[in-house]
Image 1: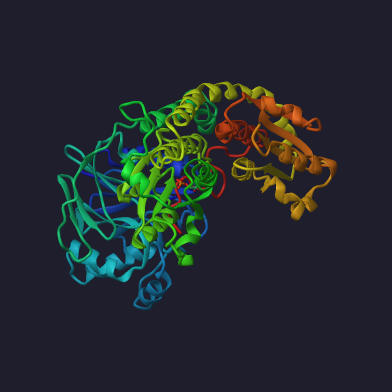
Image 2: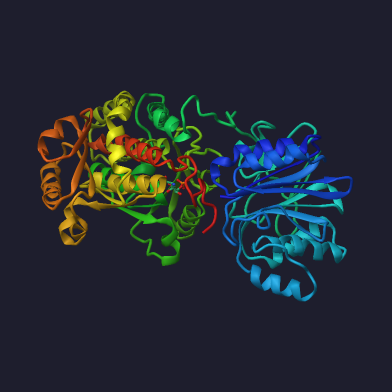
Length: 606
Ligand code: M6R
């Protein structure tokens, strides 16, 4: 999603802004730009494509000035072009950058055009620049101008504005899109997240929804929408590696796949208390009071919830509903059977998931945020936080965050089951020991790259593929299919293998790749019969399974095995070959693995 940065009071303003934009690259973008104020005039550079293009333009003619803003744009309104790239400038006086969607932009634009404002882009964002020009023309001071602009716009936004009328400050505001203010020694900064500012400062102020702020070199003044000054405390964010490098790997995704033993081990450590017992970060009394859980999430995080449902229901006997976040609150769901909502998000900023969590909170549910980014909005708003410790995930396709989420959710299920007396200490300790062994087993599964390469080569020729799983491996089939389509652009669908005969089996024709996930669990024999039916109709079975399940299938065209594991943990371990298969297929096809087309890492619009 779009990334916003800015600096005021820094001599090499455009350089630090470019560095900060590079730190936001992982969010996904298709154009970028920077604007500064130099000698009382606006100086602007924008470029389509990668930041390297903007970098080149800046080298050819550098932007001078100690106040500036920058942006990476992920197109929503208006195609990918230099004119639609941010910053947008109005009347040569005001420049803005914006993340989100101004929903009533058409009405505002029509009104402004009727009184002579000239627009240069097709974006919704440009209205912000013109609204500020209008407010400043009316003689309003920066704070009053901001209140007037905020009163007119609807939608989700984080924006920054600067003007030659007030060259010593940036004005920023947020509603439902993330924005952090960085406090430096003699300069202040703004960024879509703290990672963007990690090379400049660790002292950060997070704006809350409907806040606006005046950011000057010597500090920030924050106000609520009605103009009341408000103190949002500065926090010291954890030292971040910031611009994470690829560590010698070809892609961030490849590196992140290899980081999974650590991501799992660190997440397990975060879910283990001082006495060495699995914890859910709540007292036993609080856990006992949980009688129904609704889990809200998007994409890969949603598939993690679907796997966790099997664990929580089987171990703790607590009913679980898994909801696609973007559908949840608009459906006006009846929340009564549930008393607890778990919002799961790697970024902690997915707008759909945030809105779903807010809806649950408004309906009286206790909220738990399971996030990988500790300072994210979901973490700050949830009643309780369950952390994954996967470290920054840069590749757009989620890998280590997914297996870390599953680890935390399994720990949560065990702690809940114990508090509720559904399992005894011995069973809890056995599962705990199995989870402790997981990083080692995942490490072994990482040795599968060479075995999977020829399979990926074959798969890369396919137009379409099916992924099948049964039991807790069914959601993993959905996740495997998502990985393949988002990375390699091959059409892929995941199905519950038992569901095939109810319709999808009609899709099977000679040679269609069928990626089958199989573990030695209670449904193995039935799952294997379903696979045989697919094979009998010409499906080319690519079997990803536990070593001891191989004998069940003697008709596969390729078999990739992971070490044997407790069936509870099979979805975590089998995720590894599914990720490697999607990764290597994309590499074969030569697609943009870390930033697939049309995708963003952190989806902060609805
Ligand atoms: O940051 P989140 O976990 O909330 O993100 C949710 C989805 O946008 C994300 O999982 C997406 O589906 C990934 N591209 C999957 O690889």
